Length: 176
Length: 384
Image (cartoon, rainbow over all chains, first blue to last red; front, top):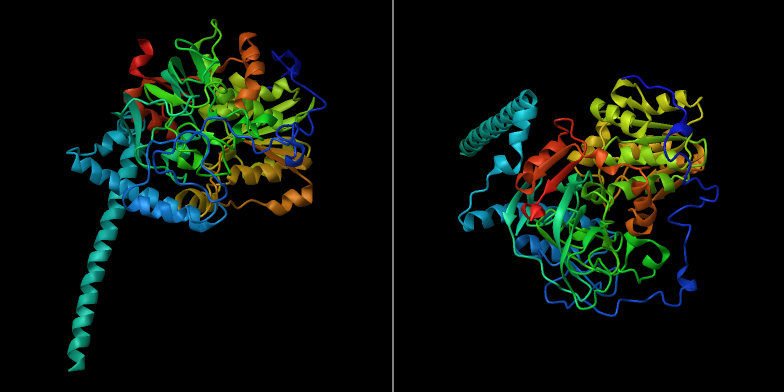
């Protein structure tokens, strides 16, 4: 399909929100400096009771008036998350451990599933049905490449291990 | 209740979870009638947002019916049908009182750099999202907005994020009449940003993506020029060339962390996570806007660092504006636009799936299968 030149004024709604004064625009337009706001520390009257573990950014002095509660830190990933929150959002020591904790919690999730007698249906969880339906050739190719790469890595690691073993044996013999 | 359940990168499922409860006097519980998968959900889905915990429920675009309210809720009541802005805002803090409802200071304990967002990791407050039969909605006196009786639920659900984010992208670009606007990304947000650019009086709107089906959709929906960057040697040179070698007046990054188009950015940003996502679109935006121009960012990036040509921002005298959309601030105007037929949000919807098939929905959207633009999920309770 080719691009065609159009007369913008024919487009429904053209220019109805045009505003020569839209500069500076949002989010600066209605700015209010902290010094101009005597109520800058205002908080909602009611605070959500803290009845679960909430990790708090050290860049704020308190728990916010509301917070989410669905997945409190637990297990090894929880230990990592607690350690991460000792550092500010300004530090890699905060964010990188959180990424690590996310990966650890994936393993914990699988263990948790198995402990509850549930074998995760990875095929379904990854939505491979629709890949099979709409993208079959590319999907098969991708899986074949992953399979070959995995087999290659396994083979490489296996042969490397044998060589190492042989080498150690030779050294051992040469010493005596 | 049935709810989406995150199990790890690219692994989600629908499972039974406990019903949400009132935790704060301003909470409401909403029975979800429509919920969408958003492009920014893909950052979570791909495991790129730190502190995305296994067991979380995603979903920040949803509408529903109020089924329970806390003791301090006065603005909505049981039985009301509401659209729920994706950001959770108290309406009282220093930032909310400036209209920065996407930057509320009283809804996210875990990070100060982002306000709370439904179903968007613990970095964004740790709230469960709306890809479920029921959802807890904090600050029900502030966020939830009653859906006008004559408004289609499909239009309403897109007013929770897609329309306001696209509109704000154009607003932040400071478009003046006759301006040339370039939008990187022909996903739902980019398509809406291109459509909204005309409302601010743009003289020319150009959208850039790598998916032909999306570009064709954008041409028809947003009345804009559309070009595939895979057919160009260099998108920046292309834009310079078609703007008389000056550059665009305003450029909008509607892609964010999942950008394709630059191998180094893709490997370091998306594969190795050495950056907070691939900043290809932002890189192109900075380099293709004219000197003194404006770059507006609504594409989502992570909380750490990105490789962008910041020296060019200085040397070209650019203005960069960026924010999560302030949905509540924009809703009155945008509801008018939908009711007056100026905007047609539901025209973006290409797929409808039952919530039970959430894994297929994510895969389809993520892999851009079956010409997918926008997917709506329907919980089993939606038809009760």
